[in-house]
Length: 237
Image 1 (cartoon, rainbow, N blue to C red):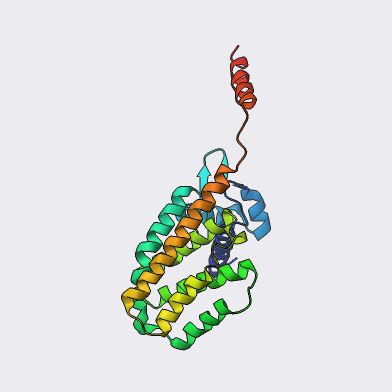
Image 2 (cartoon, rainbow, N blue to C red; image 1 turned 120 degrees about the vertical axis):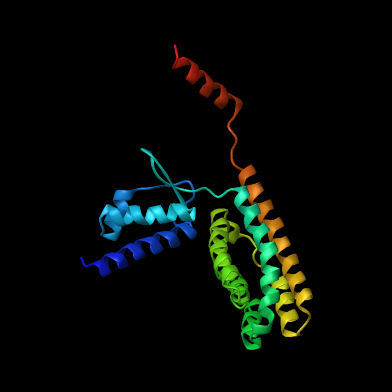
């Protein structure tokens, strides 16, 4: 295989694995098998290891010596930090984007939120697309690049906690309020405040959903704790 094909193969492995991790094809906490991945992609283990190294830098996997490759868990800290960043940065990005927004394109998004209720997966994609559309017009490449990475992490959090099966990302009225304010040419500060309120509502819903999903996990009984403790004692004597 020549060098160009090798590089293409490495890039393909990395991007495919990254998309699977973002979309929770590989569940958080699960273990990846290097040999099986190499067989699946039809490559040696070297491109897999190189891709895994990049993915570890991205924060999506953790390589544990003598134990293997594990998909990183999604934590409450992730939820807090994602929305902390969004609440601070997206209103700023919106203010910067306003002079560059096309009214017809804004109407396209408005039609998406006023039409028939689509399936939840579609609704989530439209939600994400609208936010990234506004961010991409802000004219600041540092903000754009940072927020695209953050939205990948945001997608992973939503899918990992099954929020896509609820209505928390279908805040149609809030999306419409933002779009109408932009279409009507209201002040930048008013539009930014509408975005901030929308994101605060999303943050509260996400934190609540994540907390409830964690709290609903089955807690071991007293007998389970005792049997585990006694098992440890028995192993010493």
